[in-house]
Structure formats: C-alpha cells, structure tokens
Length: 250
Ligand code: ADP
Ligand code: MG
Image (tube, rainbow, N blue to C red; front, side, top):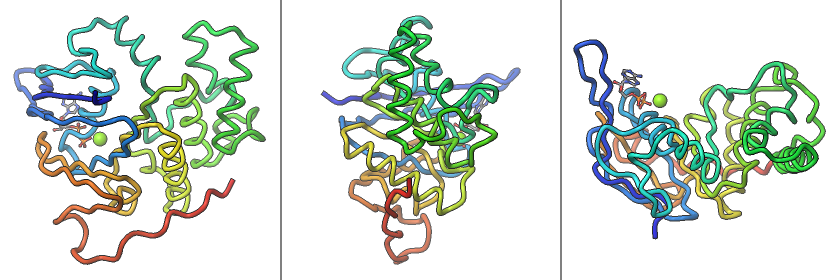
C-alpha cells in the first residue's frame, strides 16, 4: 500500500467573485522510502499540493489516502491528529518561534502531544544532535545562521518520528553551500527510511531526489524516476550531473 495516494486532487481558491483553480486534478502515489522532488514554475500549484499532502488544507475535489486512510473529508481535529502522527513539515522561512530556544522550538510538537517534560527534553535533544546542533540547544533563532535555523526546523519536524517529511523550498533562503549540506541531511534521513517530498526550483537541489514531479498550471505534467533525473526543458539539456552531495559538515 502506498504511503500517499491522491486521485484527481483539486483545489480551487475563491477570491471575491473569481475562482482560481490552483490544482486541477492530480493523480499519483508515493511509496514509503521515496525521495521525491517537486518542481515547476511559480504559481504552478506546488505549495497548494504540499499543503494538501500536509493536511494543512482541504481539497476542493478528489481523494487523498495517507497510509490507506481517507484524509479528504476529515475534520480539523482528526487532521491535527494525522499531522502529529505522520507528518513533519519544513518551510522556506523556518517558521521558528523567535523568543524560544532551539530546544524549546523542537519540543513544541511534543507539548501539543502532552508528552511529559523530561521526555520532551530528552527527545528534542536527541533530534538536535541528529541534525548536528547538540551544542546550540540553548541558542535562539537569531543567534543561529540560516542553515542552522533550518536544521532546528528539521529537528522539530522529526521529533514525533513521522514517516513522512514535507519540505516546501527548504533551501530557498539559503546559499548554495548551505543548501547542499541541508540536502545531504535530507538524503541521510531518507536513507534511514523517512519518505521525503521536497519542493525546489533548483535542478541541482532536485537532483538529490530519486524521483521528480513537474507541475505546470495546476497539473502534473511529468513524473520521472531515477537519482539525479532531470526534466527536459528544465535547465540546459546535456548539462553535467549535479555536484556530488557534500559530506555533512557538522
Ligand atoms: P507555487 O507554490 O507553485 O508557486 P501555489 O500553489 O502557491 O504555487 O499557487 C498556485 C496558484 O494558486 C497561483 O495562481 C496562486 O496565485 C494561487 N493561490 C495560492 N494560494 C492562494 C490563496 N490563498 N488564495 C488565492 N489564490 C491562491
Ligand atoms: Mg510555493
């Protein structure tokens, strides 16, 4: 059974009298253990798709099965429960609480899940160590670099041990060296069994994935398998394969 299965998934936004069809019927499935990059021009529906996968939004049409369970049609409480159990979400702008330490930011999802304090501390600390930030647990976001802040966000996404990480342009605010380090971390997480779905507009970043989905005008227009797979029409044909993922510099 696929981890994710969507059939004819659609999302219309109403803006006044106008309806914007952001997603126009996407059908695909994603197995456990996949590492999927989502690409496409700005406005093609990538974030809309990710928000639906992440149960942050509700489709206007179609079906979404997460681990075999029909998600479309569930109410907000059930969706929150599913998010806790299945999903870690990583955003372009980190979305950390500015006044909270790295440790407190990572503990937050455990607080919502009513985990006792000592256990929260222990688990959050372990995830910070996993992303190479054990020494920075008491720093606030402003005291960390962009790459480090994104690592905190990844630790937070991991703290509930979800099988699935969704990342919407996680390297969009980072320089290319830091981006490569972060992609090496996603690769390592994926090698450990976590399914990763990641939006990027950079072919070099997408090349870390094992499968590429290309969106245009709210539709899935290409679906390619293979490490470093590239889309025709994306980048220059015949460009060399992307840089080797660099070792984690922790
Ligand atoms: P992408 O992430 O690929 O840039 P989005 O999924 O954000 O694209 O947007 C797809 C389309 O839906 C765009 O035309 C965008 O303007 C529109 N859209 C996205 N979010 C909203 C919203 N909250 N209200 C109205 N229109 C939206
Ligand atoms: Mg987007």
